[in-house]
Structure formats: C-alpha cells, structure tokens
Image 1 (cartoon, rainbow, N blue to C red):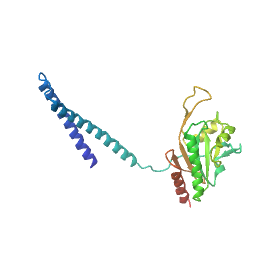
Image 2 (cartoon, helix red, strand yellow):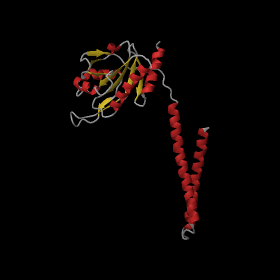
Image 3 (cartoon, rainbow, N blue to C red):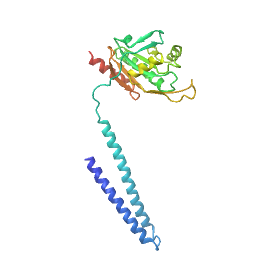
Length: 244
C-alpha cells in the first residue's frame, strides 16, 4: 500500500511539475511587453513552487523510511567464526596467559589502548558495570579482559597504572607485536594507526566491540558500543541459561 501511495504521489508530483513548467512558459509569454499586473500572478507561481518542493521532500522522507524498514527486517543466520587460541601477558602477574587460562568461566574481551582519549575509558567503565550487575543478579562469573593493541607504548607498567582508574576485576593484557596481532586476528579486530607523524604520539582507530566467550572458550556473542551494560548482562544471562 505504501508503494502504491508513493507511486501515485510521484506521478502526481511529476504531472504538477510539468504543469508548472507549461504554465510558467505561458505566464512568461503573456507578461512580456505588459509587465506584471499585480501580486496574484506571483502568488500563484509561488504556490506552485512550494507544492513541488513539498513533494520532493516527501519523496526523500519516504525513501529513507523504506530503506530503514528494509534494514531492520534483515535477519542474520548462523554465528560469526570468531575466537580461538592466543597467548598474551597479564599485567597483574607479569606472567603469560592463554585463552585456556580462563576456562570454566565466561570471558568478555575488549581491544583498545591506554592512550585512547574517550571511547576506551567509557567501554572499560561499562565492563565494570557489567561485572557488578552480574554479581547483583547472582549471574555467572565473567572475567573481563582488556587487550592492548599498542604493544609499542603499553608496557606492563603502563597497563598497571592505567588499570588503577578502573574496576580491579578487569585483567589488562599485552604481548609482543606478533602476539597482539594474532589475538586481534582471531576476533577480526580492525585497528590502524590514525596519525603517525610523531613516533610516540599517535591514535589508533579500532573496532569498538565486546566479545563474549563461553566457559569452554567458544565464542558466543558480541556487543557493540551502542549496547548498554544492562543489555550486555541480559545477553550473557541468555547464553548462561541456554547452557544449563
């Protein structure tokens, strides 16, 4: 029905615009040599212009509405092939850890860097909220992990200093450039140095995603930046209940 209505309005708009063009031509011809005889002609001409603009605006709004409607109707099937083995170093202990070190509990991974000006701190605060909300709901144990994408500047000492501003239940991990790249590749993390004019002062563009793994280490789900802490908790609880 919307398609029929839109088509009808577009045909009407096209007819109106053609009529406007024809009328404008006749109007201009009749006035040459006479001059404008009063405001009525200009008013009518203005009304026609307004009608045409209104139809154009309606067309664009309807087009955007239909595109949004089609997007929200899309359904995703299956599960992304994400996750896998990795080896990094825990800033808490200074010792190597692997994905297997956290088996028996859910893990929630976030990839970032300590010099991130605003997004990483906000996501780390959200991670702390998720852990607290799960405890309040007597939900499953979840180990929150922050994986640095900046091995050049994020030493263990830097990570420990940075971690002091956030929930102490979050484990901050780092590794060699190859180890960090391998871990990011497992989760298809996008990262690139945005501006490296200064060798030690640059930002990193990267994916803003929380990755959820089950107690068996299997990837289960992901949550984007727009997902608030309560919705993340609801998602974790859904997977927890499904495994009971």
